[in-house]
Length: 111
Image 1 (tube, one colour):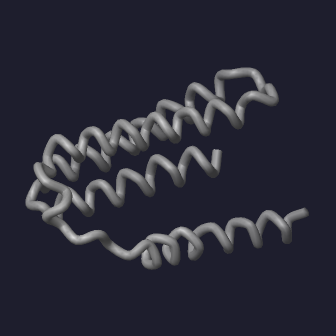
Image 2 (image 1 turned 45 degrees about the horizontal axis):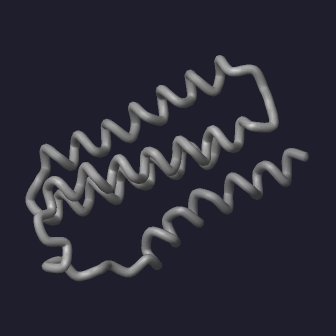
């Protein structure tokens, strides 16, 4: 579940930020809400599926599918990606770690 949430939501946030940067606020809003919808839909589907060892594979597949979908969606609005400088990965990594580390610490403390 953790992978599903962070893959889709983080991808939606980053895609929305990039679309706002290139002057596409409506597309950014749709990307963000689309990623939230993917998370909600997959949470429902995974809750309805019986537990199996393959559940992890489902979340990986959904994460990859949502990443490709967001990338394809953003490419429709960003005509020439080479015109925009690449951004550092350190800030997004720090944000994810700020969320991930306390959750893992709480899980370790709980058990």
